[in-house]
Amino acid sequence: MKRLSVVQLLNCKTFLLSSVLQIGDSREINARSNVLAVQRQYELFYGNEGEVTFPVFTKSIPTLDVPTSVQTYRLHESPVISVRSIYLIAASTASVVHIGSTSTIKGETRIKHIRQLAESTALPETSIQITKDG
Image (cartoon, one colour):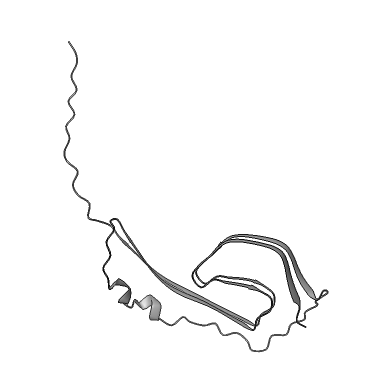
């Protein structure tokens, strides 16, 4: 039995990077994102940085073997999924906010984070001289 999804108030500030907001039924949701984040101590950009393929983006992810026959019993006392209010600050990087029914949700996020710091420079030598007044 499919049910109706009713949301009276939804207050969302930010949805980013392949995030999904689904109100109502769906058959399948696929949310994927690949992120290359380069953080440098000084602003510097080489034009071809995003063209390198890192292994984190190409390795296969192992899957779990789920038994094909799962016996379930559901009792829906109401034909309506009713939500009064949702306050959501943010959803990011292939996240799913779903009010309703679905068969399959697949989510995958791969992040390669690179931090590049400048070489530390030697601090100048300082001398402190303490004198006692006469």
